Length: 100
Image (cartoon, rainbow, N blue to C red; front, top):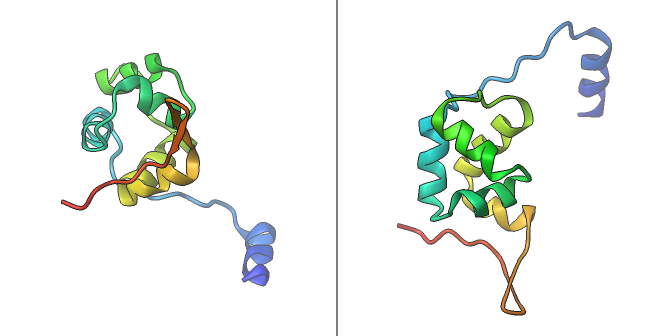
């Protein structure tokens, strides 16, 4: 595997990340499916509530690392427990998405 990575570093002209459309509707559906407020979702993502608002309104385009992270969270919501730990009333909680 490391030989493959080394060859990419030496010879790759361009690497293009291919993700499904991550737009305002995607962000809002994801946040709602996680049962999170904009503020809580923003905290998990390490962005401001205003950023979430602007994404959901379609004012700002979702790009780069944020786009990849949203895709990964959508694919496996329990990844949130690896991103952040939540403390509430002195108790630590991990995010767990219940099966539907």
